[in-house]
Length: 109
Image (cartoon, rainbow, N blue to C red; front, side):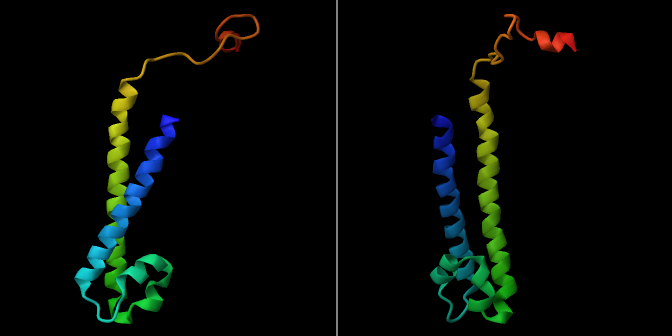
């Protein structure tokens, strides 16, 4: 159960980080007559329809910068997961075969 708890929490954390960074980056561009929250709700597919043509490359760059933060949080969390693995006990999970010997099929081939 605990193996699903971390991903369930941090998917929403990464989504929140992405949305907040994207809103910040697009608001910093100061595009006139652009509702940033509608752009974020619509997703990447409506960028070319909502954003004026001269600002599209800048908005795509802002989108990519915000997406990098999502990848960074994923990388950081995957690197931190090594500490949980190091704390686990090493056990064999392979059970005995039909003869009652462990790993006999590997020695036969």
